[in-house]
Image (cartoon, rainbow, N blue to C red):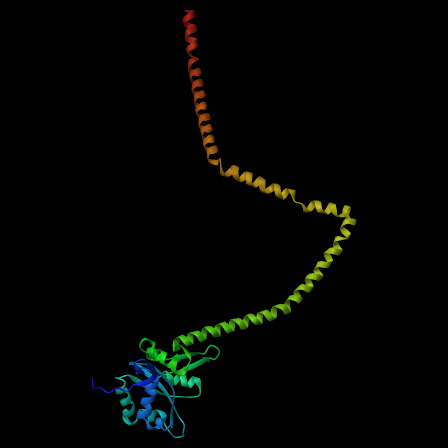
Length: 300
């Protein structure tokens, strides 16, 4: 109670109780009227307020331009040691205000609108109304602002949509685009060279296809003469040789060991039989002298 406030009158509504006033302190026109009150150059239209973007109670951006040469519009709005702008900030309860230089060039105006961040480059897409802005890696957060506030205000101020990229990511994208361009150029060169060579390859193929047709005609007329030389070309012996070799390999590889054992066993058996026969012979030889003893006994 008792506090004086400056408001912007938006509308007067007639009701049954009388006229009703609709006022606002968040409307952008309030900021415009405060500049007219505090800055005489704005009131006298020496300095023009081109556009205003505002988030009431937090931050605002104002684009200004001079209508006369030799006048600094930003300096006029800020004042000596910031006295003029400070009075406006106090009236709006500490709301931050950025005064930006307006420029007819869209790229320059966008770079100024993103202050206090530095801008390395701006690429514009007029069809989609999109601006790609390259900013140093260290100032990326400063350009975006708290919760994207700085970017939103700059977009409202300029009327463009922003695509903010860091310097490192922009360089990486440029390198990728350069590689794609080189690849497409190489493919185009290869595509141009290949059709020029194809007819050269096809012509000898057509020429080589003709002689077999001419050679095919004398074959039926001379069937009897060409049959005998075809017989020696078929190698029947060459087919039988690998079969004999495979059979020998199988016979040698498999039963070699058992045959040796059987031979050893046979040798042993033959030795045993020989010994047995020798024993029988010895026995027979020993029994021979016994027979005459029996004869003597019979004589006596």
